[in-house]
Image (tube, rainbow, N blue to C red; front, side, top):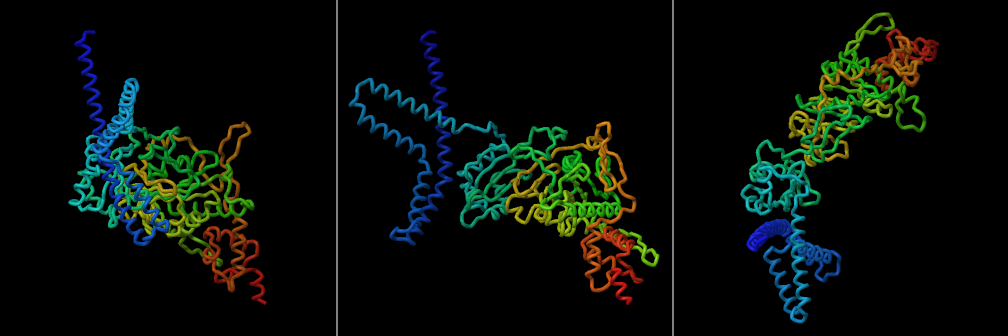
Length: 594
């Protein structure tokens, strides 16, 4: 290589090194400006706190003043010098050290000192480069670059006042897999709730598009809020098609984790029409109907979703069928509780008596249509009369007591309001809430809790379809992108014998387990011992003969269970029916006659 080529190569590398050094020192200067803008207000607050402490303790004998002084020193240390001042101090220190030390040492030591200085400067440059490196590997889009620039403390400070946001200051924004996250410092006149109400002003300051989803919630410490711009999702690129191998409910759009909801919980699934409740619930319905110890019961008066699952689940699609299946479930629950071993809190599912998941699809429709179902009954004098029965008391009983018997209620509705779409007795029993897009913040509060908006559970801002918020006491308000389970996939699932109190599983002698219909009781099944005992006790303790319809209220049993218990008691001669239809014990009737 000639001397000219060596010189040109040297100049090329020198120019590259110079550009690299300038670029990183420029980034360092910007970083220091951001940190100073963020942390100088903390020094001001610490000085105010120290002034207050000095007024309270002029002599400095209490820990209050000492703590205030310590906090001020800490706040000052956290504010970095501007780059020019840092470079001046460093140069001055090196100059003084060289003036004092270098003339007194031999040339060899001076050379090695120069080498050490160059190595130190190189190490500092490398450290700055590593510190500024994007460890997430994410490259901002054009939109994100513009937003990141406008979220810088200097830009925010210059424009906040004219946008009605004086008294707020951003920290250093970060680009994550879920979008842009930025802390916002609030002075004494601001709160996270007030900042949330000023969302339009923030959107104008940032020049953000109207459709960009924005979240504002309380920060990790007092005086701070957290601003999140959902410019991207951690679920992007994932195959969200449901398969038996991908059985999760969906993917967390912030962390990218698979989200599951275990069986054994009482669920509320809510969302407006078109939000995707049916699609979101299908993976859950599969889990509830899969396995020898799981059984699924669907109450669906619309007959749309229930027909997809009628080869794997017991489906009630008429008001009378709803009342009948609720009677069966309530009887099963009471029977399980009556034989639950002493010291055991919950029923252990078995193939004979599995865990039963009861899904009410569109609860508002069930409350209306199955609220008064006409039944014909025969009176004591042989006449036939019509009485109205409701499925709601039985469903409320399942919600209150079913968990111990491994009978879990899932309530789905398009109208998530107390009294309209969710019964008052059922709403407090809900353990897990799955909320897709709803129309109003009031509906979001009913589903997710009164503190929903204050903590970032803004279901009224979710896009449709396929996005949900899941609140179970552990999760953060991170949206979940639910999996898609096609109707054809549901229809193609293997058949399962639907649950019924007149159906029990058997195992053939050949060895392969199968499910066979077996009539375990006569069509006119007698009442359970527990129901008979409760009805008899209610009649015996009454001061006067009791009407049969009042026994349901007194005992808490369903009307069907009371009717069976009364029939058993009257047939056995324990209870007598008067001419007006009232009931009394046979002993009481005899004593009255005497």
